[in-house]
Amino acid sequence: MCGIVGIVGTAPVNQRIYDALTVLQHRGQDAAGIMTAEQGALCVRKGSGLVRDVFQQHHMVELRGNVGIGHVRYPTAGCDSASEAQPFYVNAPYGICLAHNGNLTNAAELADVLAREERRHLNTESDSEVLLNVLASELQRVGTPRVTPADIFAATTAVYRRCRGGYAVIAMVIGHGVLGFRDPNGIRPLVLGERRTPRGTEYMLASETVALLNLGFKLVRDIAPGEAVFIDEQGRLHAQQCVATMRHTPCIFEYVYFARPDSIIDNISVYRARMRMGERLAEKVRRLHPDHDIDVVIPIPDTSRTAALQMAQKLRIKYREGFNKNRYIGRTFIMPGQEQREKSVRSKLNAIEFEFSGKNVLLVDDSIVRGTTSAQIIDLAREAGARKVYFASAAPPVRYPNVYGIDMPSASELVAAGRSEEEVARLIGADWLVYQDLADLISACQHGNAQISEFDTSCFSGDYVTGDVTEEYLAQLQRQRSDAVRTRRRASSLRVVSGA
Image (tube, rainbow, N blue to C red):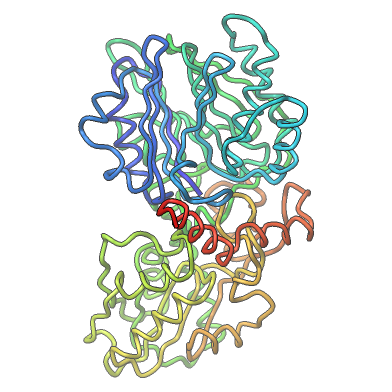
């Protein structure tokens, strides 16, 4: 999962891209990068860490130009080293930079073709570099000194034919403009904004609407699935539907967890979707436990607050903030490695004993993925004096890997895989556990946009909308991207760096 942004402006864009990336920091805390262009010259700064750590004042001064793209990274494919910080760049043709959010399901096949038939060298294991080289290869076929929007769209159409998976892409063709496109199923989000200035209209592409609004851009629309937009350096907007929409299936986990609550994705308010999740979950608690003895509803910050508040109102139970959050600790779900996630929970959350002591508490979380952090939080509640600890998840059981850009590559690491809800409750130490029903989750999100008839629910249902995910593919993912494999890879890279 990553955050991407691109701006074609009438004034320098360096600070605005920086500001947009800080707003999108929740989408990736592993690395950040910005590339800008001025009079055919490429300016670049990227590295590991948070946006504020990667960019200092002297870096910003060097990022010149009115056109640029940016990226915040959380690694899902490839490794989590600085070498895979984005945007990526190839010098031919024209000079192309690319920032990518998502996952290609046929990356290995494409990498083989690129190396064997198209004579392109790949420096990393990242599927983003694969995607960049596919785009470059298709633009290479144009063979003219300058490309037209028609050339851009023809190349993008060819990319759509070759690439499978869930992806949103922003690319800068140096000296020409900025290209944005979204996978044919609309799994990963991408929005277009505009800003009128005395010098002309500026355009911006971003993963979430909150980045547009923060910079004073007005939301024009979501990029349609299978659509490409190109903004040339003169500020002219071109758009073309490059492939027919297969199934418009936005990733439902965006509404559950990833997106900020003040974002709107595919005309659905994330905040209101989470409110409805809480209402429907409260109805299920009341149905399953009509004689419950819950004294207080407590959210597990931050993404569950909206749902928890609605649950408390529906159940007519007190809502309390029972955990104090250390906001200098990143999102534990997207931390690379189980050991790091486990260590971070107690550093991140401190229980307010008064809200737990002698009470039966209902803890509300957005989802339960690996289960370890849920177990630790329940332990914190009991240590603070809770008599009974009940647990509610605003999402259904996560039983299947997510292959479209969310870090759930291995079924063996998912606590609900192959287990009943009662077994999960025992494992995490809850007195009882209630999961959201999938139908209720879909209804909570769908209510905001009746034109979307379905969502990507693959991690809950096992229905992979691209139709190319096999058991062999999932097994390969586990071999490549499980926590154990990543831990060994990081240890190996550290030995190389230290000269051991």
